Length: 114
Length: 112
Image 1 (tube, rainbow over the protein chains, first blue to last red):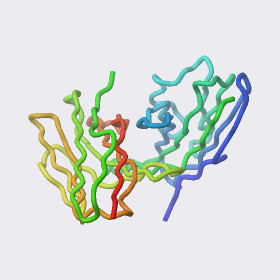
Image 2 (tube, rainbow over the protein chains, first blue to last red):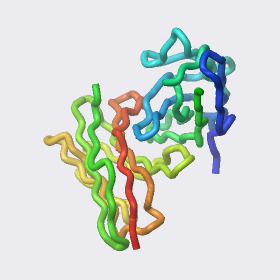
Image 3 (cartoon, rainbow over the protein chains, first blue to last red):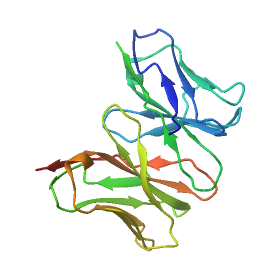
Image 4 (cartoon, chains in turn cyan, purple):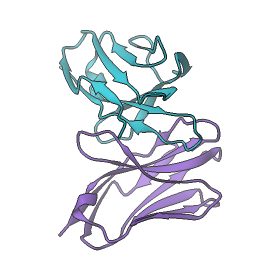
């Protein structure tokens, strides 16, 4: 079964340091999403890509967060500088535009900022 | 602004019983309502989904009931099993847009 790959699985970083997460969506999936899930809450969308273009980044804190999907395949989410409140699970998801609206999530990157 | 309200926050059900989780939404543009199941350390996985043109959808032991006029939908898990113990999220997205708005989650525990 095809999966969305994310790395690293866990990341501990110090406040004010830079951190990056990587996502490889299911092959052929044009749409890619980054969600943030704070412990005990539902996921919240950070950014949505259609191929290499950003469709929605209205909830992305652009002063410290950036995301790219240069060739329309894999994607990187970066935080610089990290703050204590950024501690969360960062989830990547992808979907094909087949109309069934089925997301597939990766297992996420658990970020702890100390 | 929280657009999808989910309850209860946690739920304990005996094995073989029925688990019921409820969600309510505000945005009338929503037209796709999925439920996701999440185990610790894993990403959410799509469980079942419904569109507002039907009032109920059943897949195995899982049923979604949908009330368009009340803007509410619920997940029913029949014959609940210990393996169903997980966190469940309802979600919604508007027509023509796959952007999902999630509820706050329900931690379900099935006891023997």
